[in-house]
Length: 340
Image 1 (cartoon, rainbow, N blue to C red):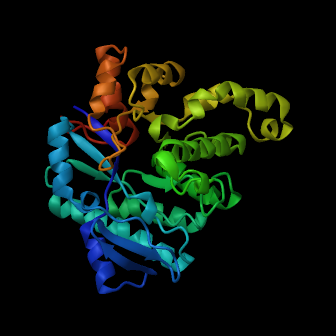
Image 2 (cartoon, rainbow, N blue to C red):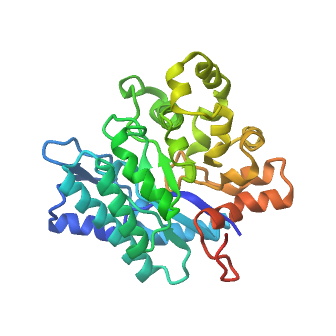
């Protein structure tokens, strides 16, 4: 049994509703050969195209069979979270995404191969908290995906405290996924936006939550860092040195950086079993979950391979492939029992 916790999906009904006209401030800017490009708010630049694999649930079902995966946890594509929308429209957009995903999975996934993750209007911590509660209680979502910043504000911004509080109370895991990286004007060549920019974004998000004391205030949060945590796991020594010399970090957090490293959760999208071995040695096998980044080309086409190649016992391998996901997202196993 293998469960992929890092995959992206946009319900096809969302695109159809935008075509027919919605009051969420989102429109189709143009429709190119790769798919529709959305515009968020008047005058906004068109998004990257929504490729057909993002909205094709049958494609994902076929991929599950090809990759011998049992289940996939579906998040939205971060280009479409709409944090730059005015608040009322942002709330409506998140509600549309959550309702549409819940409805599509109910209608088109009788085998329950997919599990939905919420989207929230993170431009307001209060409204994000409200939408998360709605998505969990009314739509059956088992967690939430957020970006690494909110229109340039780091995740330790005080306005987000209601959201962290709600996620902790609901025991809803949070997948932090990078997008719109800092310094993007220098990342245009060699696919550096994805190779360097996104992993740096994840690092910055983790550092902000640690240095800003968020994980001290909400110790029971369950936060998963994508792409093996970016550069964060490999700069703990530097971060500990910074804490020794910076009173502002000491004041914000009582934890050493290595403690914070073992507090977060991570996916396996590292492509090298030796690097995965290092990550596991630092954070523990119970804090690593299988991921693929489906359906994007930079993702892992054979996600279980890296786990099979790592230096793991059969029990440890099983934890990463499925048991950690079952426990963290409180999913039912094949015998119908909910993991604890």
